[in-house]
Image (cartoon, rainbow, N blue to C red; front, side, top):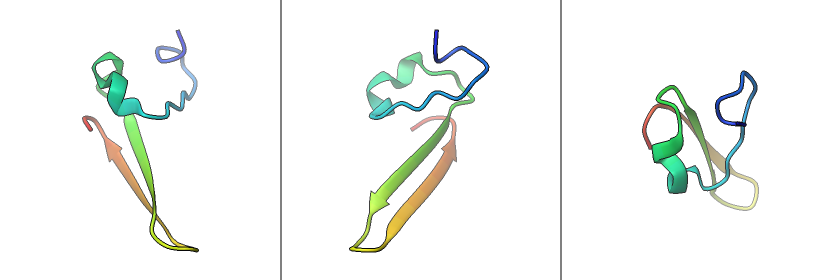
Length: 47
C-alpha cells in the first residue's frame, strides 16, 4: 500500500525487496566517508 501510493516511501535496505519495487524507483545511497564527510549517490531504476 505504501509503495504504490502517490507519496514518498523511504525503505532502508531496499535491495532486500527490490523485486517488489516499481521500475521508476529512485534509489539514494548515503555512505560514511570520514568524520565529517558523506557520499550521496542518487540512481533511477535497478540497484
